[in-house]
Image 1 (spheres, one colour):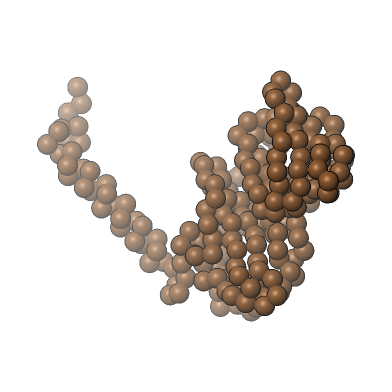
Image 2 (image 1 turned 30 degrees about the horizontal axis):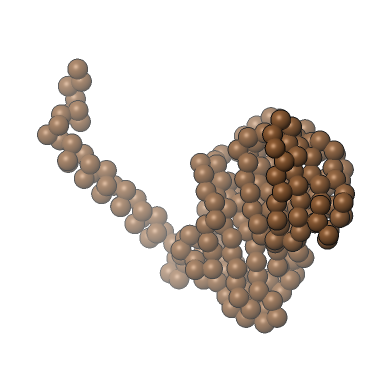
Length: 240
């Protein structure tokens, strides 16, 4: 039987209180580190957490026409996918305004070697719509990454944290069997409809719209068919 003081029932209320107090103090200190006028990304009104597990957190941001977000902090490495980025205004904290004029489907990677603080503005003619996949775990050995895919997949970006593919299919076009590794994020860039046929599992039909997101925790061997009436475009992010 354990005889240390933390195992004695008489001390459990004190231990529980201490743990709660420690958590509150840590949270308070974390927020106190932020400069005046800066909020955590999860407290910025235009940013919404759409998905989260122990590996990643997907946050969707929509800034209305002519508006700006609050200054907010990014604490994790992140892959960004832009659905409406033309006219976007990026303002780093205590930095100069930038207008990258990002096209639909553009992708970026922003490391968080130190927390990145900025705010985003939209032009008077178009809202800003962007999603970020935040990487909540440390980088792994990139030699463990899965083999690259074949055309019509195109590699848009690759680094030690992941690999981004772009897939465009015309109506009626399909792709041969390929492997989608576990820990993959899938984004629809366009509207449309696709059917995924998995090996050993029933097919699934997906109705797409810009920004629609799906995460897979398990490996999938599949084909994709554009069985809609318009071209479709997908972005898939393999997280290493």
